[in-house]
Length: 402
Image 1 (cartoon, rainbow, N blue to C red):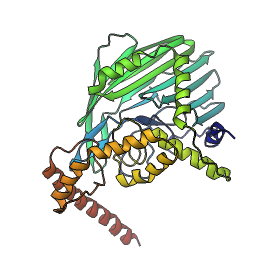
Image 2 (cartoon, rainbow, N blue to C red):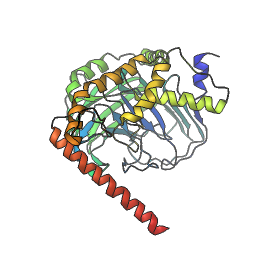
Image 3 (cartoon, helix red, strand yellow):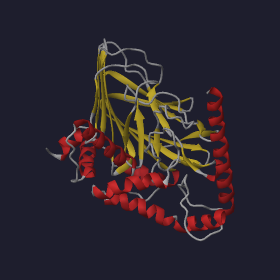
Image 4 (cartoon, rainbow, N blue to C red):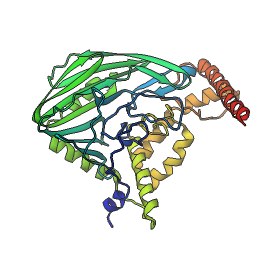
């Protein structure tokens, strides 16, 4: 049994239409540097929520560069955007198939309606981690392909009772295929580039109510939508990378080859089919969530946008041995390099809070460097007090119920 065949045991295949994003479990794609959860349409609908609730379902695009230094001096990853239908969509498909193919790192959703068919295929290239690729194919007898919108996340309810407001600025592009957005929320400052390549049918885009509307023309369509994101300071790097993508077929083939390379040659074979599939899904989620750039490791939920908005060193310590044993030394090395950059910061913070020499690794670890040790130490103590009070309140309410 080849590595490809073993990994495929972790594929997820759905052929029953649920039609309820609020209750369905989304499917995850990531590049290590960015990622998103997708709903039953293969898109991102629903309102972003972050209350630390384990039952929260978010379908949003996240990027490692899009972080905000907010309450208690902590760094928080914030949702960046959603790709969804412009209007609420109610039509029920006659036939339905959704497949997450983890060896190839792609999600394909096929829907057959009464008068038209729609196929959406999304994927990342793990070595070009800033870009999400979305293929849209449709053919219709009478129905028009519904418009999509790229929706910047501008009103964010973050954890610890934060309400963060953002703004979007649409910038001029020298390349007519590109739409360039600058999205700011709190201290987060990111660039988003949307580029379209069409082999059948036409697309045009325009701005409406802070959203970028994507309109399709023609009874048939075959389009590639590229969504690139990065910190605004990396604007030129992202524009160069996205400008080099000109052939949709070659671009997809390169992404599949990149995933083959990313999986490597080491594997574990488990006799039980259920545990085998769970193992390879777990490895896939790790490879989708941890990159090689030397930047901060992702939150425990990866780039799904769920539950936590920061990472914890102890969580990473459980994952690091897996990366080493499976030969993913580039990712493992990147994590070590990140923490190495913070050793002196942690020594100073430990001295400031505890009055002793040594290194105590901060629980809600920072994404960026510390600039004010006195403020950081004070806010850490305030945060601990908040957590103690918040937890105590929850326990008291439970005791009252009992």
